[in-house]
Image (cartoon, rainbow, N blue to C red; front, side, top):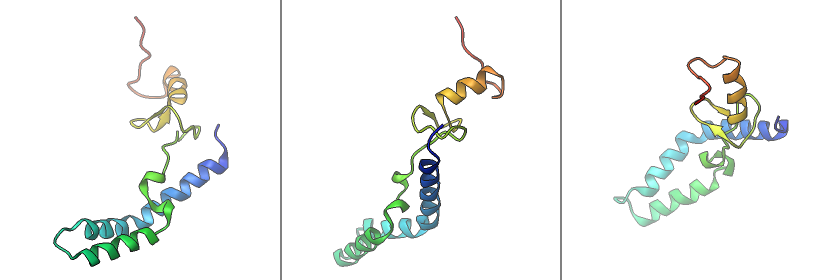
Length: 101
């Protein structure tokens, strides 16, 4: 089980990303628009840098929803390899069968 503080910090980051997503997308579109003047694009980049750092989507860490483990994460199941194996072995994940050959 991961530290509760690390899990909560990641949850706060996810909320910030959701709150600033529209504003960040709008400023990025302005900054990348080649039809605008250089000054307008530069101002958009300055405003973008004034947003909270944790509102950037790249700062969010993928974590297992069962244990909070940050490594060995499967996006399709939203859980770590260890939790996936445990739940898969007990038959809790439909369609998942342990391979054997």
